[in-house]
Length: 502
Image (cartoon, one colour):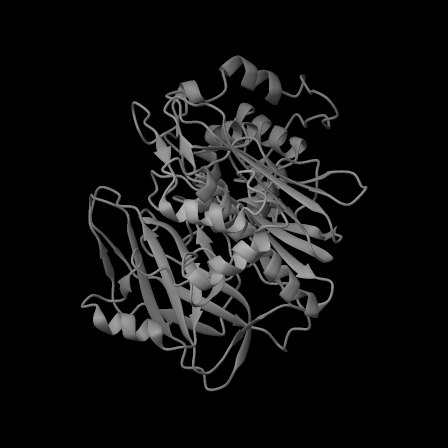
């Protein structure tokens, strides 16, 4: 866990009375186990911290201080007790009780009560001989030593103030032979200014050409989106690297370059970023194919996001019906500062709706990939529904603007985005084509819907209606859309809409 908000005000914490009631041995609520009269670091607290917190709270990791021994923990005993009780830490926002997640960072109620009791009883050390050994954590990397390490050749300067920066960095792979890859771990050096990073694989050599034309290292990421390259996912604030399932892998050919598109948000002082990337090879070629389903696609670009100042429950919705049998193995939410709640459900044909992810209190600083402990079957015809809400009021403590102002979709941190990205495996490898076709058609339909809603009523929109609205009802029905989709794909109007990785 990462106790980043170490300067939380007293008003943001529990009242002393409530805190004492929930952490004394005489007041145990619900089904909690009775608390020991003598809670010690060695017997009770160290196992909790070492197994749940020290992974991040150690030298070289993201947390601002260590939690590796009694002295580390004692001086922060009250903070640990209060913040774990409020479930601010460990950082995990997916609601329990729906599906199980393999990488869940959540303490049990009994563990939280023990941490509280330890503080209330004076944070006693206990018998040092009973303190468990620290786990053996990988040095410098979450996933252990990579098979290949890529590093920017020189630091990139991020100015102190101004607009957000999107910049692409080209890292040659120089592989002597084709490789299969199961994981990518991104390590930023200036974490305070790195908002997120997207990974791409370029086999065309174009990224090197773009880099050569720009006098700076890399090339501008606002003017070139990299959508012509293969998308390999990415990293966002609070994210941790995950291995793909055993039967999955990306193909890295010998002529490929690794491209990072990094989104920088200036921090108020000049920073220098030198990103490092660890590549983990697979032992063998994959036996299955996989894809990403993003609801809504393109991080909500086609949904007309426009959040009025003062709105407390602005809602973005999207749906997708699976065209083939699928299995889902992870889900990733994304929004910016105004994000409030996330909900993703799956309703199979004639079946009961299942919640795949529910977040009641979004935190921009912790954008976790939630890996399902057991894969979720999504039979053909399953309806996926995504609902994301936003709070653009003055009461939202995360609102970056005071007083609030209207916020629209955009690439800056102070703009907004919307996405729930589901990683899926088709039941049959040959079904990947049908899945990609359905995703593409969904994006085109959103484009059509946005165009028809355009109040400017341009000549282009009038032409679309006149040509393809065969029954002249002012709409484009399901039977009218295939012809319009085909026209749009050959017209060039969809540039940047359907050529992406989601």
